[in-house]
Amino acid sequence: MIIQDIIEGKKEWRAHVTRVKALPKDYQIVYKEIQKYLFNVGPVELTKGIGLLSGIIDLFEEGAALRKGALEVTGSDVAAFCDDLIKDSKTYADIYQESVDQEVDKAMKKVTDKTK
Image (cartoon, rainbow, N blue to C red; front, side, top):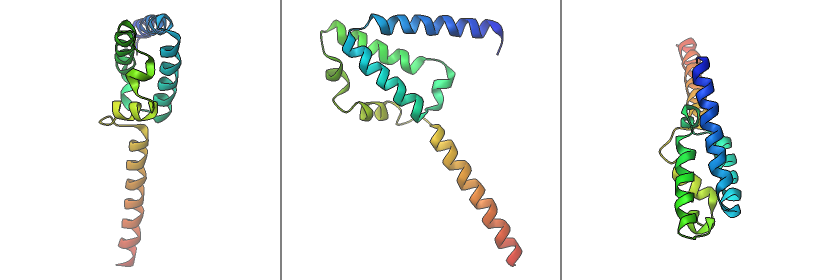
């Protein structure tokens, strides 16, 4: 990553944070919880920019413009809303599970090869 990419990334993040702060308070609260949830669950696409998070802000800005409450937009189960957003995304948990399976397969193959 070159310096220019880092600078552009910081500018993009600052603009994103400004958009969050412009939302009504209930949307800010829900957004922060969504952000925490997604950072913990770890969809891999979050490392490639803020597209998913920007999409959530777009949705929230539209909901706020229609004078809907944040939970009217997401539903009362915010975690389920998040899970639905990333249902087709690969997560770090998926990658870890795959690596564990591969390690078990390798170890089992070694054991099987030795007993032959």
